[in-house]
Amino acid sequence: MLISVILVSYNTAQMSIEVLKTLFASKGDFELEVVVIDNASRDNSVELIQQTFPQVKLIVNKSNVGFGRANNQAVPFLHGDYVLLLNTDAFIKEDAIAKTVAFMQSQPKVGILGVKLVGRDGVLQPCCRYFPTVWNLFLQRTGLSRWFPNVRYVDDMSWDHASPRQCDWVPGCYYLIRRELVNEVGLFDPRYFLYSEEVDHCKMAKSAGWDVMYFPGTEVVHVGGESAKSDGNISLVSRQLVALQVESEFLYFRKNHGLLMTILHLCLQILADLIQILKSFIKLRPVLISSQYMQHIFLLCKLAYVTGFGKHSTK
Image (cartoon, rainbow, N blue to C red; front, side, top):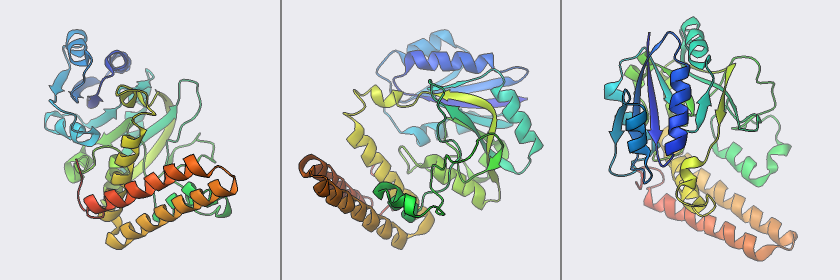
């Protein structure tokens, strides 16, 4: 059986090589067709991948086109029965492909499968998630979630993670897709530059009648944040990352819930910032914290305007 694998590389040369080594070590009896898209890395990613893995198809972009669009570039070159999206900071076990493909074969309605994710320290990461709503995001940001225990929050970690279960969406670091689903609904919406692309994709899959499932039979060690660090200390680029996240949320809500819900999301997020400012005054830490939340309110309003309340992307 042929498995198509897509990796998007961005300034993670050594880590990309290690991930590819673990990937080929886990191929077992499968044939792997691997496509790597490099998003204009400034390190030696391209040269190192070409030298170490000449069997890999390498697409080199002249600019960073974003995560979702880069994955989409690989679709015309895929011939496998299953498509695996693998991050360059996600290290799989030798049994990962065999176990996840076998599970998918036993569950014909499952279109997308995710696995148990742990950090380098072995700590469990969110890997089986609920869809974001304007309400659950507001409650999480304000800390009011403890007063609403029956609301489904995006990252619900209060279960044993030991059994397979259906969920709304799974993270894209190990993202196994049935080829029929790709043929039916495509891959990622190109409007998303970064963040929310797999949330939206799972939404499209479920709307088309497919199941999305979490599978605990294998683990993936997910490092996280390496591409962001390549642009400097991650705290220095956090504003840009926050802006991308805000924009992606506007795009997601406008596409899937309409204009009125997008406006409500903006209002609730501004209210959440105002609540945080009030808390900072109560705790006698008003200056720095209040400034941060005022900047976030400005960012929300600016991105709501320039995206037409989530109608189009800025990138």
